[in-house]
Image (cartoon, rainbow over all chains, first blue to last red; front, side):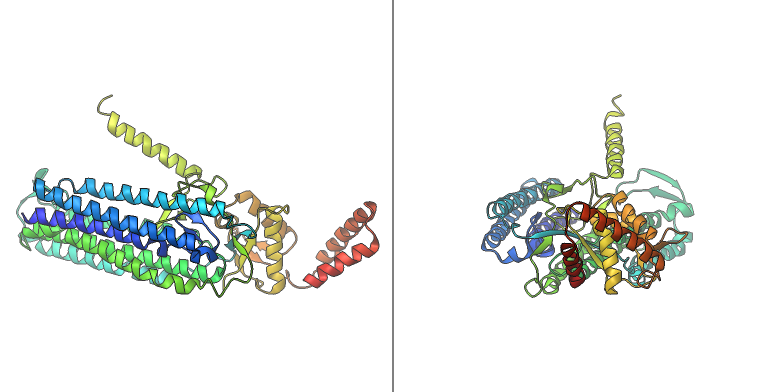
Length: 365
Length: 125
């Protein structure tokens, strides 16, 4: 019963968070790129744009509400949370359709009203390398490393008191086998924590190398905003990682019978709390965007960033063969995406597809 | 404050020439100082979203003309002589100027018009 309630609560929270993030999304993206469409920043106050944004938000509230209520009804009727993943996928799909609708409308207005006419379109870029905020980024590693150290200490302290035969488990599921007690087996949760730490380190490294695009009309201010945003994303991920590490630690502690077995059922709660914190951190950044961009006061010339809509397929997939960038900031949404026109990404996709084909067809062939 | 260059791919001026001109302009206005490190050609190409060879061509020309220098680690700096008096540069500039004037005269551009263009360029700088 408790497991059922926790699963229902988890999926409800995730659907709500997805809807909320989409609701505030127009405020999280640069003013010069709305719904994946490059527009002159001055057009952010245009009546046509404002009505499209209003319509987008109304659709987000309506569709998220319907998905949320349907998910709850199905959970109550079936008495199981087995359909949760399906409803989360439906939520993602509907959010994407709502976004595409807004994008189509905005592109139509932009073209019919000739928004870019009279503008000089330029490509700005920083020529001098920035000094990375190394100390600050290293500090973001302290929280997850503390949890890992704590888990290791507990594991080693409990080691002498554990049974000689231990179950081999993955993510709190039923044991897949039993094995003799070894240090490696007892430290399995710590290894899992280290894998997540490794993934985070790779993400941080990639984020530090992601390209920063100065935006008109205030190039320097837009750089500050983007650097602040990037540090915010790294911090938010660090919080999420810490909560996932706590999650693994609690499962381990339940395994070693330091805490009651019921903790295994609650172990997913820290990860969900981590997701809520990530959304809270990102939403807080939202309020800093409009003030920092200060569009109205800094428009001495009619200059805008080059209209690069043609490189964004469906406003989400970046394909530019001339751009050597691998990772680029997302056009709409939080975070970053890849340049599908880059040869490395093409090779990576081929490898991924071949691996998937092998996984699916391997047993058949 | 970061030094930002701006290029326009709708102009007839090639992109490498625009990059070159931006760097020279940065040195002239003092926004780029001797010893300042520049992004590698690959990183600048990423930032601009253009081909790596285009940026490399601009950097090569700037190195050849003495505005930039490259060290053994392939890092690119502003040359400490870039903004000062350079006799080699003056010689090259005189040669180029003579050749441009000869070409303009051959195409029928009057001396008065040439002087006007030079004055205009000096006035804008």
